[in-house]
Amino acid sequence: MKETTAILFTLIPLIMCSCGEKEPNNWTHADRQEFLSECNVDGKMHSYCKCVLNDVEKAFPDVHEIDRNYAKVEKHILTVSVGKCLDTVYDLNIDKDVDLNNIYDETKSEYDLFMDECNIGGTMHDYCNCTYGKYLKYGLDYYMKNIDQVTQECIDYLY
Image (cartoon, rainbow, N blue to C red; front, side, top):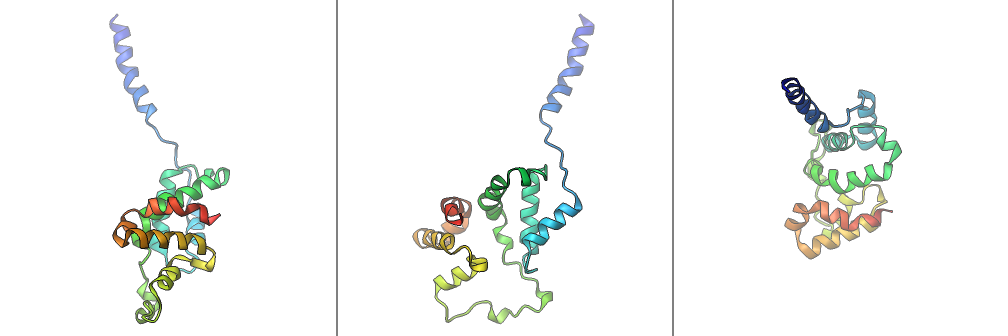
């Protein structure tokens, strides 16, 4: 009986520890560099891309999941990572001689300024219109605090 009890007390902690183990992270330095270079095309969003990479790597420790289920990863980025990393978007790299005087154009309407910031590459017009509508309806404070929900509600406009 003592032997059985001793074995049980030895095995139970081992079994409990193994149940909570996460999938091992197999991202390589090259994988991370590829992700960052694809995300940070213009070289101005390093902090944002690094934040998104960290979130994606935690959510998908198996880098091959990106190829196997790209739609799931993309949806995670758009609905979770963007919300988590939004505060880093305006991280300007002053070392690259950014002209801070021309960031805000007083002659543009609020809508045009919003679209300039949102519609990167000109391919997200419908999505940006949807998010701008949420901004107008609920206000800036709600929009910023609930960006993940706003993104979720407008995500269908990206496809």
